[in-house]
Length: 332
Ligand code: TYM
Image (cartoon, rainbow, N blue to C red; front, side):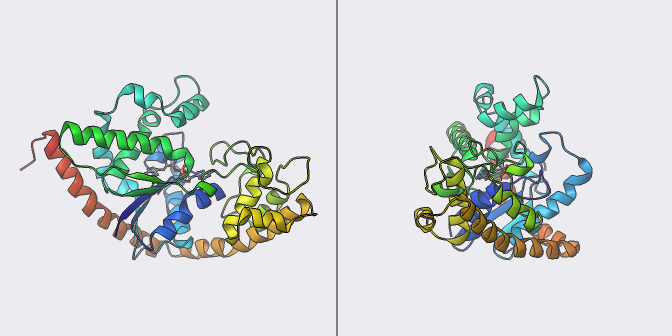
């Protein structure tokens, strides 16, 4: 079975619809046909200011959400990034291979460091994509399911893999991004020209998977649209309505055009009202399941311990090859 790998950060109390539709849903469907490795990226979560009192619990909540979404820990190797030491170890080797210039060109770094203020961004935020490359390359996956915002990091990963293979010996597989066009960029409900984001969306713009369903319904009903009142799919001229149609289609398995046609002669109020119902029906069982999983922390922690063991068995093998090829003296 071809392998897939991906990670998600525990930077908030809940995943949002962008995370779910852009990435998590693909992890779940790919586990049917692929050997899947999915992890909670807690190392990445400290690259920006974070609250140490919340991180461990958010890591558990993230794992619970992944299981509630449908990941089966018996099939998918589900683990916490910091539990597998090889990630930071390979990251160091790759940092010594990456150029300062190519790291500086990463648009996510530019955006996030601008937000932190001149000179205040951490060096970890700068090397973030290189740690991400290490996360990926350790497992030699064929595909990495992510949203559109991660495409550039995947390109850097491939560049670093190629450089290592060329300089030392063929060690890494060049991974391909797995990005579903339809849901690659879910927009902010309050500002549909921007992506829905944990770090930059306003509360009205972001639907949180674990929020009170009634609150999410209300956000859908207050979503920003346009003044033209015709329900049609056109992301260029009607980003707000198109985003609602995208979410509607993803949650129901119907097509955007077909949904738009079913609202012919009706207005945005009807579209928002129906979508609000679809959203409530979807998040209610998801939320219940997550909360149920969080009631048994011992069981959850055991799943993550088992996942880390399985992950480390793969990652350590790759790291040992890397250390040898780089020329390190092996400890005897
Ligand atoms: P994170 O936690 O920011 O996001 C998790 C996943 O959600 C996707 N995503 C979106 N997709 C569509 N529309 C949106 N509005 C939206 N917002 C977020 C992201 O693209 C991502 O796939 N760097 C990664 C975490 C990571 C990782 C890795 C991923 C660390 N190591 C190795 C893959 C492989 C990130 O920012 O995740």
